[in-house]
Structure formats: structure tokens, C-alpha cells
Length: 308
Image 1: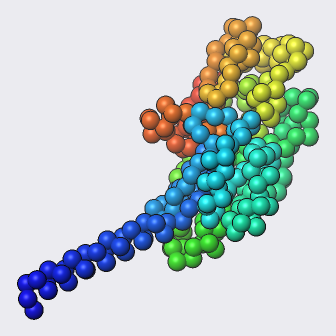
Image 2 (image 1 turned 180 degrees about the horizontal axis):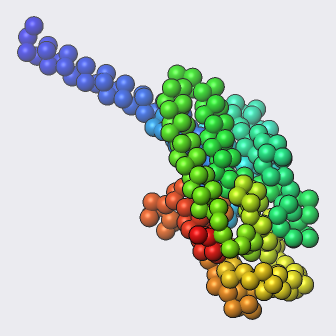
Image 3 (image 1 turned 180 degrees about the vertical axis):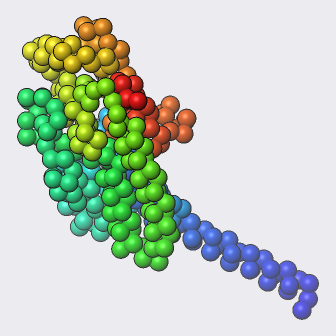
């Protein structure tokens, strides 16, 4: 074989390898999720087998968010779309039927769990009379439900992409172990406390409360945009004084005004309790994740509740 022919064959072989690599990269499964927790869980399960687009941008509050046309296009270009449901992301619910017709696999996460399993009604732990009967959509704040969500995503990915099922199983098992460890840390950390009553900005923590036996008292309802009545503010202030509550919780993506008002009235401090509807740009730059934010929540709960 001449040197020229050998060089030509070598170039051809390299071109084939490069084409294979490009083809493999472009064959990655495209996924989209309505907001951060679902996108994060999906990314943990899919690993390097998929590209996961988070539709709600950093720093946005999910209850009132409406995606622009460009983000809707990302969903229609995906093979798999996850949304929470239970009223958290109603824009996604409206797209569901058409997405299915388009050939996109759609998962409504809250619909996979019975109301008994996911703590039922928002009024179970709070005393917010204007939220009576509303379903609390914040299921991801219970680490064991989060682990069940990871399992549901794994099963869906195996159905969509059975060739990579072993990786999805391995990734799901590894992340579920981390979530179970987080659950154990919450159980141990909140086992012995001065009080089990807390006041939060909005009624997002019923699942966390049910799991760890906390009595949740919310200033506003399911949406943080709701305004409490003056009577409600007076009742919560009296309750906080009676129960010797020394910290009022607020959230990073919602106004802290109401929490600070009650805290000022009773001489209490304020602390963050993050419902993890999304991360901020600062969170992302610092490498914060679902688990690290939940650990921060545990740390602040222990302070507010006076835990040993």
C-alpha cells in the first residue's frame, strides 16, 4: 500500500469516528421540565444521556409564571416533558393534550401520588381560613416523596429509552440514596425540639410538616401573592406571642414584608425557609442544589424550633 493511500484511509477512518461522535451527541434525549426541582431530579436520573431544559428561569416564582413562546418551542422539541400539576404550573396543564398529540411523552408528577400519600389538603397543618380545601402542590419538599419522584422519572425514561436503562437505574439508585440520607438527617435533627410550631410566609410546607410532625402556620395561602386580612395578621401575632415563637420564616423568591411585620411586633428574628420553587442566579453560581438548600432549611428549622 502506498503512503498516499494509507494516509487517505486514515483520514477516512478519522472522519467516520468524528461523524459517530457527532451523531451520538445529537442523539441525546431532549427533555424539558416546568421548574427547577423536576429538572434537577430528571438530570440526576438521565446523567449524560439527556439534555434537560428548565422552562422557568432562575429567580422566578412558579405560581405566577407564564413561559414565553421561545420556551414553549423547547417543550415541543422535547421527547419528554415533566410538570408538577396540582395548580402550580397551570400553563403546562393547558399544553398537555396538544403535546401528547405532538408525540411528546408528558408526566404530571402530582397526579402519580394519591392525596393521602402527599399530605392531602393545604389546611391540614395551617389555620389559613381562605385556603380551606385547596390542594398543596409542593410535594417535592418531602425528601421521601422526592425519592419517589426520582423513581417515577427513571421508569418513564426506561420506557422512552430502554437501551440506556442500566444507566438510568444506577443513577436513580445513587440519587435516591442521597435523598434517603437527607430524610434521616431531618428525622434526627428535628427529633427533640423546644417547639414544633412554626410560622411561614406562604402555605408551602404541609408535606414537610406531615413527614416530620411540624405544625405549620402560614401567613398567606398556597400562592405567596395572596394578601392576608388584617384580622389574620393579628391572630398570627397573638399566636406567636402565646406560643413563644422566636423566629418567623420568609422565602428568597417572595417578599419578606409580612414575615418582618409579625417579627417586629413580637420582637422575633426572621429566617429563610426555602420552598425550592426555583434557584436564584446566586444559588447557581455557588453550586447550590436541592439537597444543599434542604440542608440549609434543616439548619434554620433547628434554630427556630430550639432543637437539641
